[in-house]
Length: 185
Length: 151
Image 1: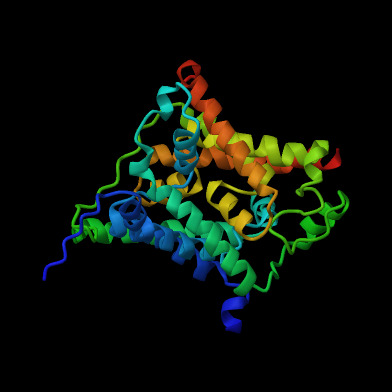
Image 2 (image 1 turned 60 degrees about the vertical axis):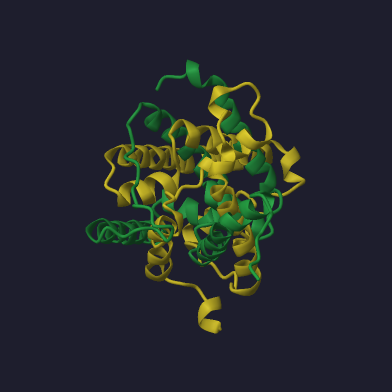
């Protein structure tokens, strides 16, 4: 049991994550990708009068079941299969401590990303603006890490390579230049 | 005696048909936690080139996916409901660049792409529900302005 609870090296978790691609194809000819779930939520809950959300989302509901499964699996793994000991580069933690972030034992920096933080400027940017960009950007770019980087590149699609390079470039810029500015607020 | 079901395909069969994807999601959710890719700190490390971990996870996932797809194509593997497996080719449009950049901005800020958003909530970071709702709003706003955006 200990061996499961401990840190898994990337060469164990990475290939297992990659096997999701053939697993979903074999289970039902489904292309692995998660940002579509956000579109299906729009189509199911508030399609408005927008063409983009007028389709039979029930036919794509597998994606929502998969997303709910992620939530359940993560709950289970976090509470029973993890020692929460994620070892982060000291240099990063030292820098983050100057912004008041000390605890890396949660999945998000709890000093900023928490319910009260929602009403602070930096908390609002990190939660609301950040989330908005993820939703807007993935749909505009027609995919995220799973759809483009993993599925698209696995299938040797050059448009997915362009998309992957674009979001990596965006991430490099914001993580290095903008995030420190937000954290200083 | 033959048992004939008089139930019309309704909510029950809808859920039943999708149950296997719920299970696949559970396994994937466990892998996201064990792969540590749901950690905001891991994402910062990746974009600051301070750790190889995320590159190892994503790179080896792509390699495994690539080999699996080659095997599926070579042996014409069918899905369990006997369908021929086929992935749609991606058709390039400029949104891949603009949208990709914007998604990258959001990924670096929230430390989560769409899959990990669900996983972060599951791990108990309940405020990420707001991040997810905001992502849904972002998708909706894209849908609203879609015709007016360059593609």
